[in-house]
Length: 413
Image (cartoon, rainbow, N blue to C red; front, side, top):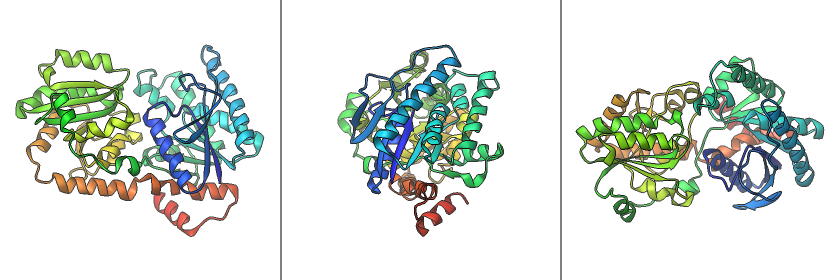
């Protein structure tokens, strides 16, 4: 089986998008499939037309000419489809597997029809909702509705559709998309990377002034929808009951300057530590010094429909997880069992939840066991990649193994 993945961007850039992509491609290679990827005109940074990164083959698309919307998007789709076509000629795949946003699906669809190749279109988030979450769009606007209509149009014409969670699947079914056309390929963790937590890095804790402290952590991108302003706002109340509590923020993004300013003005400002972005190979060192990972996502369509990746990484690292009670988190976390859920958009509720966890450590080890067990059983990419097998085989006319059918049926039950 030869699969060409069509991507917005990819390695060596670091993001949740690229980490999921890497995990999929590596797991597919481990199954004996041949894979390559072509990145779109929005892939940032200087890159040769073709390169190998982390053992994976990438074809690159040059940036498209900057034009006002929607001419700019049309130019991107045209440039990307030409590059995908060239990659098909060079790699000769059996199937195209395009990943959101919808521009990638539209570009891949052109090539799939021209080359008579089956197309799987995978949605990780609806582009229009991501724009609202990032502060670059407004729900219900003309652009929002047009993007939503394009997504539906593309989904109807793809040969199969994959989504990362039940929230996205349910939304598509409500639009009239046939349910048997959609599979759920959930966010997962590469346990060869995250499955063996480091012991507490005392040197790093001392370097950051966190030796002997109760550490609340967030490792990820600083977008508005992540609710980090609520986490910072919760710190004064948390410190009232837990005098030794500190907050460690690792990462960066559009909200970083505003969050740093908020922290500087906070009565608990001396307990809030910004580290900035760190190399992905060093992330587990920072996980090792955190007691509780907090994910205070705001409640909106994006967070209700889409499951994040970071809580799974934290559970694989045997860390306690506290997260806002939104739909995406409820697909990953069983409240009081594998993690703690608290009311979204409420710094007081967040502070109370964190204080309760820090005050009673008697059940920590059992909860870590249950959370890590959930990830190993249901969110390990080495297992989850089989979700694609039945779809690929069906679309290419190859024999389908009974084990593949049983697994995909269980997922979509």
